Amino acid sequence: MQIEERAVAYLKRSGVALGKELYESLGVSDFLLWRTCMLSRRIVTRRVGRRYLRLDRRVEGYARLSPSIQREFLTYTVVGLREQGEEVAKRAAQLEREIAEISARKLRLAKRIVQEAVARLGDAGGELLGQSCFLLGGDVPLGMAHADPRPERSTGELVAGSDLDLVVILGDEVSDELERKLDALLFEIKHRLLVMPRKEELDYLIKRWSRAREQLRFQSFEDMVACKIFDEAKLLAGSEEMFSSLREEMAERGVLQKLRALEARAQEYRRWSELVLLATPRPEEELLLRTYTTTIEAEEIF
Figure 1: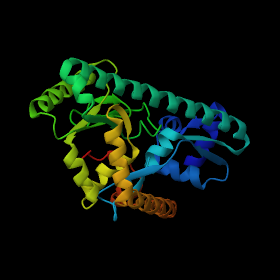
Figure 2 (figure 1 turned 30 degrees about the vertical axis):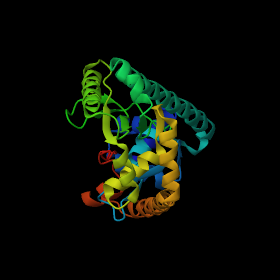
Figure 3 (figure 1 turned 90 degrees about the vertical axis):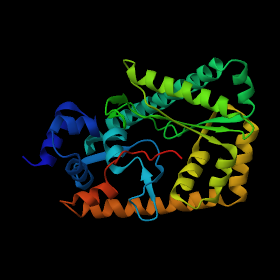
């Protein structure tokens, strides 16, 4: 039986489904299933959430959109039959609420991590807050966090969906000793989160204020990733004045304009990718890696 017939039979029998539910039930290639659903006249799909800029070394010009086509289909797309339109709309609304709840829960966890680290520094922690910014980047502040199990990069163990990308910008006057203590605390918390029953992944980076301002030159791939995080990040704790100053300098130096141009390029690349993949029944692995799959669905933070 063809994939479309199997998908239609499942949807008639079980009702609307997320892309991942349909994929797990049918046991076929997720790419072929996505392509079938997109080309079918009997099947409809409804995507929820937003798309945002992802920087990828393998893509010419670095700019692509996140979630990838694969992640978007499996995690953020409701699939149904044309006659199930009302049911599709209800499930999509439910999915949006779930994503918002996951994002809020992970944001609360990130805030608790920072609060614990600062508290354990004692009096120095209070001083640190006036001389630093604790920023959360990635899909959590964008309201697009998910809870789908995925392998953690260093251990390969499954963690609970989206990771926490923490960037700490320290004022240049902060002592090296205090930086080392903060690094040790965050490293300890990172490993504690990975051994908890509900494993969470914390990625963190500590940099100096002078280094953050250097990266506003927007010259290297690393600079571009850093600026994208500065643009999207949420301030968890620390100096609002420092963070506002950084954002103002980004605007003055044309960094925000360059990021918007990359977003436009990424949108064009997504449109091109979808057209090519829909026209290619058996794409080569290299094409899939550049256009469809998640890769790791995260670059390093710099």
